[in-house]
Length: 198
Image (cartoon, rainbow, N blue to C red; front, side, top):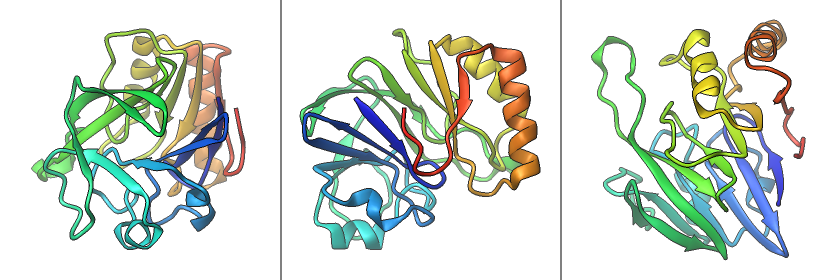
């Protein structure tokens, strides 16, 4: 599989002409959806789901059951479900967004394990039950601290880990978070700039 990172939390997975996009939010380049066969949305927040762009794209969207995505039609997904999306095997993990500061309400959040190998947790630090080869790691958010990220990477024990969820971090902040992760979780961690592939 070829995985391309776009700005913030969006990635595109490609294999044998099939294209699956995960979390194309409002900060994501429009080109992320070029030729997409399907879209997985981890949760309803705008930085993960650009509803207007998805409406215009006319592509099939999968999202957590009960997600509030306006008039965007989507196929509801529940934790534990296994499905075929654009020819990719997908297992839905987790169920809820990480707690947000100040008791703000959370929402449904489904992490996706694609082809038993690539795990995108959305805004959650849910550790899946099965082994993960490549982990996409949220780096910064109002609901997150670096110590939790390090613990998450250690708990998942993926062979490789790549930072995502980073659109609000400047170069100094990225250097700090990436430095901590590389030092504390071993040589399998690396940050990808938008447009980088693995």
